[in-house]
Length: 376
Image 1 (cartoon, rainbow, N blue to C red):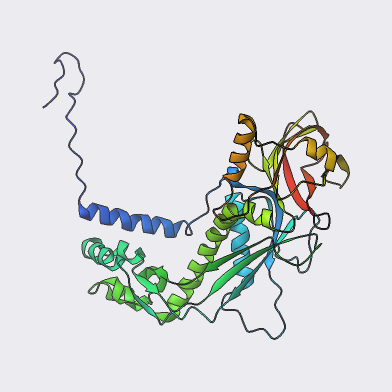
Image 2 (cartoon, rainbow, N blue to C red):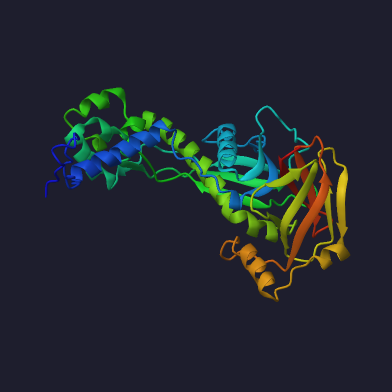
């Protein structure tokens, strides 16, 4: 029903809103536009999640290549750079240090080393077939042509490549068993024409839908680029979900959860306070807090840590255990001990981070880095 204004009001009469009609053509074009925008933004990016961040510093580098080993199908240095970028953008660790230009060097601030390697024979871009998206790309091609080039309507089934990111303690103490290994399979990836087509094939789309066109040499480049994007996101997501359980099952045997969650501790008037929980597979034997120069600011022995243990009895204790165990993936080891930390008055003048050493296994203590945040 039309709306009317008083003739003396001097304002333009309001018109009724038209009902919103969204056709299949609109939805198809919107889908194509989303694909174009995603490609323009450099592919998917890991989303920050401070609640699942690991309070530690990690050095990311390509794994050393064994003499006589076959050539890897994807440059491990390029993969390592993407892993480092993904962990940094996701805020997965307190600090991410790129191993680029650090051949064999481990900076003292690193708690862990992530070594990246690639295995497999190749992408084999000759093996491809149309996907279910071919119908959408054909429809968009019929309606508007160009956006259809970005729709991933061919899948490449011949790849047998896997990327591996293994996290080791930087101290090198204990055995050489990694704390966590993330495998990222790089098969069955899909490409749009813009990432797989030869130049002449774009002209051919004037008469044929794009899912017909494929150039293996161009697809090889597109698959390499997509593999790097996939690794960038997958390793960061995997670490945030798998680290607590992996840490419990490792030789270190514990993980730290700050309260509030994150990787930073507050500073006021040159003093820091650490609040949180340490979940461990067994009772803790020692804890040390160190400043940036390695000076011990606070030390707790086994008896002091036992006094801070959280019981499963009582509402507060049950809630603390539940919150910590909710961070563990299904099937991960369960903690056998939980310690509450409320450490105040730690002098931090001139420091930008604190280190914490926690021992379940005295031969291989866990190491954490806590960023300082607040007033100097």
